[in-house]
Length: 106
Ligand SMILES: [Zn+2]
Image (cartoon, rainbow, N blue to C red; front, side, top):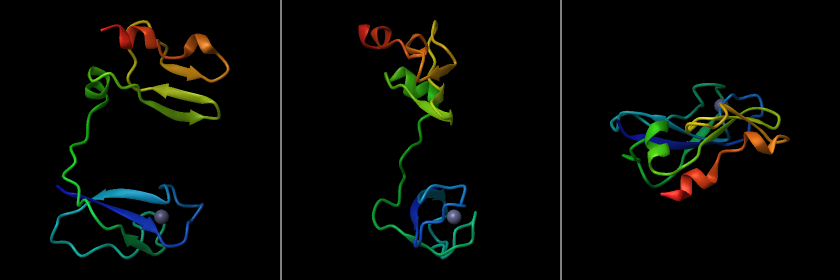
């Protein structure tokens, strides 16, 4: 299914989605006019009705990417954890950082 990019017309700090977000939508559907999460007006961003393929975390890892998702202040979950790496990366603890030398070795 294609997905489209939208932006809140007025940034809503209470919305659980970021100011700009993407949503799966059948091509025949009319553009959204309000955010499905917070109900404030949104506008569709032009260009790239994406047939971008989303990569699973394991595919990202296989391609040499590292994906960190923020879970708390200074704390990130390593979604592409490789053997020997910590599940959580703490900004204050360098020993929890992804092991780049493993990634770039091959
Ligand atoms: Zn919203």
